[in-house]
Length: 317
Image 1 (tube, helix red, strand yellow):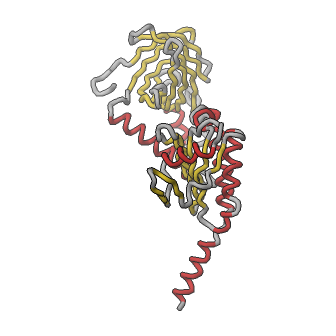
Image 2 (cartoon, helix red, strand yellow; image 1 turned 180 degrees about the vertical axis):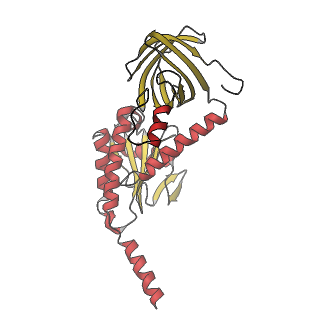
């Protein structure tokens, strides 16, 4: 008896779900579409005119307003006048073909969407895309498909906090990075910087190229002068201007860190605990040499030579 009551309570809670999550998800969807339209990934001329094929509400509380809100969202992102509502797409459809009457039910195909659009659009241009939107227990799911080619222009589950959207983007980024490494596209670069005039800064970097176009380089840095003995991290960005590399190093002075670990109130030894250095490298053509300019927070400004990707030991890149 108790089990029956619990099941009925659970089913009742599911049937009468709070539509607040769906409303917030629709707000996030409008923001996403607006961003995609502005950055050119989902431009207006690729979507509009569009035909809204189906808006499927999961809960009774959402049926009265979800279709209207969907129209507001797409018109808000792409402007009014180009969106059409296909009320006949998800009902029983009858047509006469070759002297026979054909009755169709269930999901509509792309060819049927095109046919229905031709019958109802009048003198307006044909629809470029079809839109399906459905509600699920955490938000809304939307698909936008090109009617001419069947290509999926946009497909996304959207929740109020964009948790699934963020997780999906993160997984795609991780997958791309792993595939890049599996293909052997990951490149390890080493740099030896000798900035000797007027100040002095000597350092060695071991970095890994990453990113969609391998323009980012991040890795480990060891300094043997500025600071006297330091270790830290570095990050650079390769630009198109003469393949100039711009970035920075953040180094920790090992002597100072050792003294302060023994005496927390101890003074700095030779160098501050942390040193930051801005780095600009300009390669000489396609050679393994280049000019380097380094300015550090220790007051050192040096111009010198950078050795690009030259190995000191066989075990090092």
